[in-house]
Length: 108
Image 1 (cartoon, helix red, strand yellow):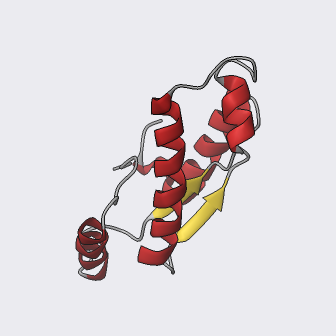
Image 2 (image 1 turned 60 degrees about the vertical axis):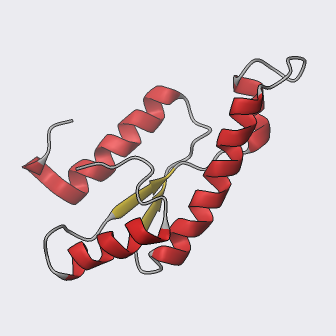
């Protein structure tokens, strides 16, 4: 299972921790694709274009949730993938990480 953006609350994190501790799910691996807000703005249409309030809110949410993830799961395996790379390169790197972690247990 690949939950995107989960856990996003303390209650979610506590529940997921209990599932890991009881052996229901394996220890999570977190893929972090760091990219600066400036690069996000550039990719969204350049510096000349006004960035929408929705994009700004998503950036704020991203920063908040990234910090929360590290707080909720201090022992979690966090793997960084260069988010500034071309999309095909990012996809290839993520696939390699998941295959190394899960082998033939998942289809990509």
